[in-house]
Image 1: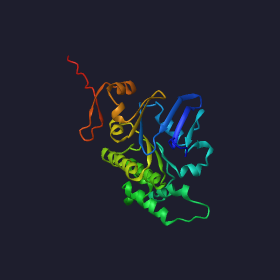
Image 2: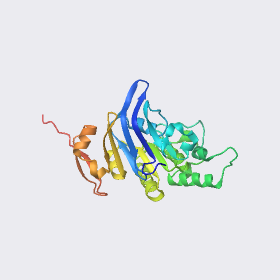
Image 3: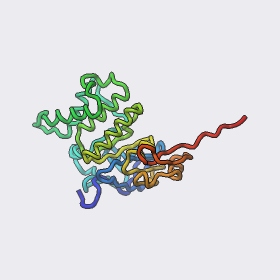
Image 4: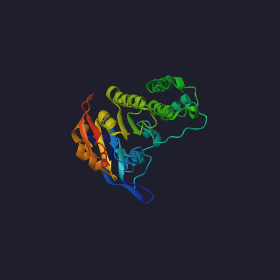
Length: 268
């Protein structure tokens, strides 16, 4: 790790799919020990940026740096011991059980002659417990609801036990109670276990409540970043999302709460 620099950053990034450029000349630094949340409208480059940070998308220009070195110059298994990713639409092998899928999170820690260990067993058990999926352990992933599958995938990433976690829309398919449970878990991982998390979220109010560092994107560029209480106001929300609103203190947390402007009723 380079002294004074964050563990994960990107500089002068140009990100594209074939000839379609999504992100151009973007610099980003993820504060160590933060819960960083990336927000913005659809197709603004949020998930593309996360894929690049996770070594899943090769930049056309620029570099993602992990612990002082270009992430693409490092062996994939070494990266996987330090950085875990929950992608947007993961796919499980046919007929695999929940326990076996979560156990795959231990793969980066396996060596040629290393057998399954008590540490592996503990990591899987703790991940199942943390995500409320213990009772699903022997069931096939194919049988689960969308919300259950999302929690199982999160358990697999937690079992990987990496200091950096990247989560692309981790609350997808979850009802509001489970959304809060997952975000509370993310906050706990940062506060009690010192992990650094980066998540893409669609719900701006959830982002404001849980993020310690917020990145607001539009059209492939970072419009603003910082603590939610310092950067989120009605002007920023309208600039990024095109939404007229009021921003008031959340009565539970004091963080910014975005209240959309009421629809004007037309009088006949």
